[in-house]
Length: 232
Image (cartoon, rainbow, N blue to C red; front, side, top):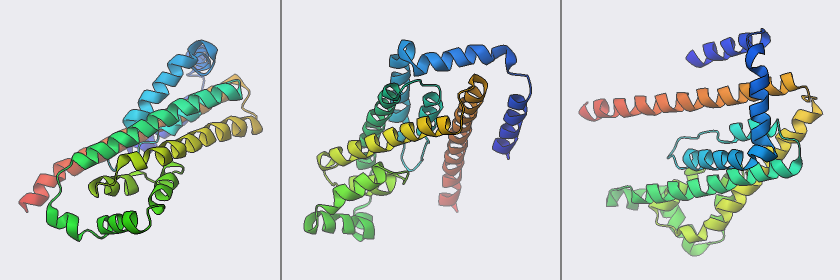
């Protein structure tokens, strides 16, 4: 409900003249980040965001939304690719962090031995080792949740070195595809006008922040419920 109210307020503000006073400054800032003068800073910001977003366990943070928001203001395909690659590298490192965090978690031996998915991963890794990299590539290169595969791989002690190539290749394909689709898509529907471009960018960024806030609140709620469930 809170997110719906915020989005409704955002639409009202955008449709009104409330942003006229800061529209030019925001447009200049987004253009600076997306283009030559601020390209390095924008790339670093997207890289760091992607690392943090993909280092979380079982919480999918939409790190490609800020990428799409910045790409809207970019003026060349080369810059779009640079920004997308920065996000991809950060996302790949984040997935490796996620694997290492999951591997460090304690898991009862009896649960590890009886878990069907862990036994399947071990068996597949021994009998059909080529399937594992394909699964990792599939989740890394699409919007499917990576942790569905990465987390069980870590608990099953599947070697991370065998997953590095599909993880980074998948993230590279995914982020570059998002960047190019956004770049050409927004131009196909004619968002060349600075006002429309800025409004679209604001919607994407605010949507990202609201969704991240929602995930944080849900995670906090689950942690608060956990002691109660154990006590009951």
